[in-house]
Length: 155
View 1 (cartoon, one colour):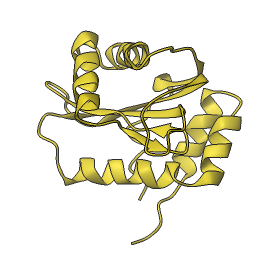
View 2: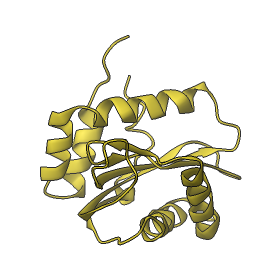
View 3: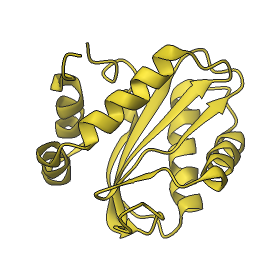
């Protein structure tokens, strides 16, 4: 079962994003979340994402990062996908700069479901063909179709 389709609204997908730093990237993502959720402080989102990065980079390799944070007052998980116009250094294990970013916010009391969501994001973005399709997608709608049509491997 695809857990990603319900947490990634079309309004939280951006292609050809300009961001020169992680902070700038997180500020853009926080703005998307604040606009789609209402009542959530964008500054708190940025600080939570930066605090998580200080624990260790969320760069997975192959040009992919999955920054994530727990957010007070959030009722359920919520995602945003950003495709960067210019790859950004992210201290990934393979040292490849990041251009595909899935930002995940979860409630303070994270559950097993949140770990399953992170696992599905990692599984999807570890597929080279999926990464190529995300890079080539013409617009946010095409990106959304890729996320909603993808199915995880049965375990």
